[in-house]
Length: 575
Image (cartoon, rainbow, N blue to C red; front, side):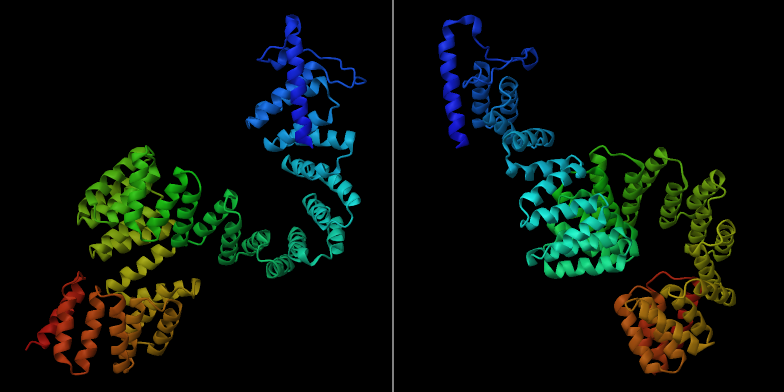
């Protein structure tokens, strides 16, 4: 019907234009400047609309047919100025407001249609427009009208309850939700109960409502979002991440939730999952260099060094020559044995920011290049600039340890701990240096202190257990420590080796052999494991096999004490 009225109006407009051709002074220009149009008084007792109104309406309709909705809207506005009471003009303006997603216009013309002509059916869109404009209170008033007019329409009651939750009128929301008996709305109603519980800080009930909501309706995506929020507040981050992922399956364009999920994976150090989620993000949205850089970092920490190097190389080509790009490209290249290129990256990072990290990374690089002198030189330079930076002393200690200079290493670790007594890395490294330099009682004391601090650290548990086994003291306690470490990290080759060694010390030679061969499946480049295997095989009288294991051990880098011990044992088993 409306389309017929529009066509008739367009025909009237054309006839008006035809009869006005003989009077040039009344012709309307084809190009209209809206700002130049004077206000026109309209005689609404007349059955005919004013000629200008018909002209603009016809122009608007032609633009609408051509799908030039913005221009159609402007022409309908001009027609409305001259014939503001015409229902056809008002409805056309309302239609164009919808097509151009102009919320303010939807509100204005929707309200006019309702007030002047009682068109109740357009109020749905008016309420939505109020919400889009951030005005839930006006939307509530509209839904009140709709619920009064359509008391059996469940959707309007549900939307009104949702708005009451938004405005913190929770009692009104509960009252409405309790009246909704339509089973199709069960999942959605439970979701709203969950939101109310969440707003009241009742996390356990909120979780229950959201979970039941999903059981009734697996498509209720907001319940996944509610569960994610609950779990994040409770600090159960894995469950929060799972539910954020489920929510994104339904609403993949919600960048806020993507960012929440990315931050969660960063907080949990789950870099493999972080890399996957960032790959999905970059496929879905336009290229974002910050997110691409985060992907490179995720690749780096998930041991995908080739991919990390490629990402940071791409960023350099795109002109993103910032400090982080050079640093991570240098780290990735260093791990790929591209030492010369890594050196240039760290030097470029230093040009961007003179700070401890690039100096430390450069020193570590020089140590890998077997240049202790250059490594110490740059570390000493860093100490001169930042004498209170404990991490400089820590890394200097690790460099000395790499060159088996344990006395110097111990001094540096003690300096680091003097600046930061709570640094577990420096404390562990000090214990390690004591053990490797033969000061095992001091090492035992340090690792016992660390276990008191954190009794669930498998590395510390294993190290203390291993030292005790090596010393042949407190062997049952040693086995307990190593078994606990193994339960915490069952696929660690180092811990399996320790377990085999303590079994050997306890006299379970056959069981020890099984565990040591198993350790080799995880780590086949550690000379200590070959040495342990050789000693067990020698104990079992398998001399040839023992000699083979000791010979394999000598193919790998080791400290002088272990090398001397292996050579002495080989002398014993010469054919």
